[in-house]
Length: 370
Picture 1 (cartoon, helix red, strand yellow):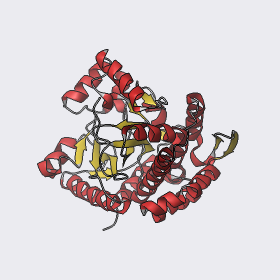
Picture 2: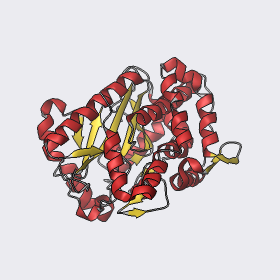
Picture 3: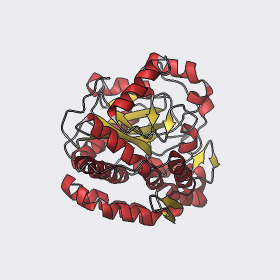
């Protein structure tokens, strides 16, 4: 398999999946085609459709710094927010819409999405979820696999910090991330294998392509995956954040962790393979309780408060953030930890005003001030 792990190291790109909302009913609006037409061909690389017509993706260019990526995201949120208003809609941001039902959603009329629904049926049609993806530029194919393998152990913590989907189809689920079990239905999703080397990764992808199981590696929807065509490692586990500042803070954590593992690869430090069952157990803990729960802290092993694990991890990689110029953004995670996270806010708003109040709060906080 060819790859492009040859570019500038530690560039960063961020993709956000946003919801299109009817301002009167506060339900989802099937409006992606109107938004794409409004934004025009010039925005084709930065404003994209997803599987369902109520979902809008925005994507930054590869950026040299996190500050640049954050600035691009802010501009994109405002731009598509203006386009939504011109077409009788508003934007919202969270891991799920609190009341929308997947049965009522329309699939985008594109070959990839039609084929996906034909292949997976109910599994694909139920994917009414919204996430954030962070791409980190890595130089060297084996280094990219090492970094992806290293990031596996942090998947539960990354999820716990980002939990923002306590509701599903009008029900308070008792989870902090209902998005997680919904996406768990997909094949080739969740905690990825520990590949160990580029040779092993590429041979396993080639096997699946040759067998006709997948068209290419982009049909591997792991929580963390190499992206050979872009030359990045992509972190995909995050629930979509309502506040832009939270997206940027989580991206700071992702890129700083990637930087640490890249340095460990250069120093020829052996990477201990964390058992998949332990990561998966932790991921369920994170999706249930978010920042209020416990995680099994590997490799000690011990159970520790998730908030404590988060603070210890942030401290451990603070020098990496300094080197990357994103120490301030990483430090902003303390505000997120202290608040209990976005899902906790949704639950609090619900207890005070019901699901309508939750949707209004999401809409009000999605577009950053100019």
